[in-house]
Amino acid sequence: MDNPETIILRSNCFKLLAACFYEPDKKLFLEEKVTENLGELLGILEPVMAESAAQLPGTFQSSSEEQLRVDHAALFVGPFTLLAPPYGSVYLETGGRVQGKSTLGAEGCYDEAGLSLDMQEPADHIAIELEFMSYLSWQQAEAVVADRKVDSRKSLELQTRFFNQFMLWIPAFCERIEEGAMTDYYKKVAQCLAQFFHHCKKEYLVAQQS
Image (cartoon, rainbow, N blue to C red; front, side, top):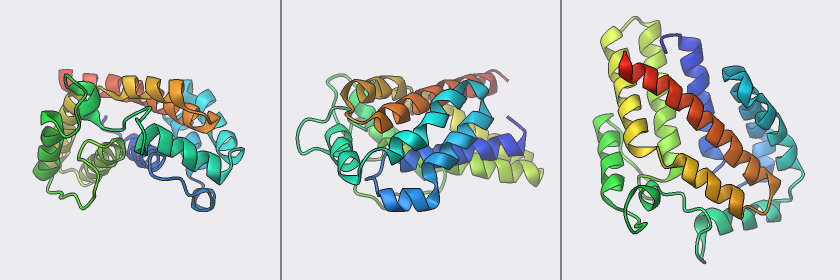
């Protein structure tokens, strides 16, 4: 994981995947080419992800704004029972509670990195966790380029620890999305996130053993 270009590529994938879990704004997404960029970067990062990633833009464009918003609300927001709760503690803790010990643990990692949350969502919301990993990856890449080996190692160690302690719920989350989503877009987002998770799991396992 010492190649800065690959680390930046991974950082951008984390960031774009995070965007997929905020309330959809179709005009903005199309202007920023969110799904096109995400699909391209995932395919470059690992060819096995290319097929699912390539289908992401088409499924987004073929869904109306209303369809996307309704599906997003049913899956992640409510007001009724969430089909795919986007909070890690629901999957990591007995009883599926929100704001559990794992939530506080995730928040502790943000504090360790010198970050403070200014959001209404719990600290273990999927978008927040993905953005945090994007931040850490970017910090690592900058340290590698500047030959700051200690800073690079610290960033990688925090990534590895955070991923293995607080992000192993992602496959179960993706299964819930695929089961409950009404649009092909969110089904495809789930597939891309699941494949990206397995890519990262391999990378951080190597880092943990080195």
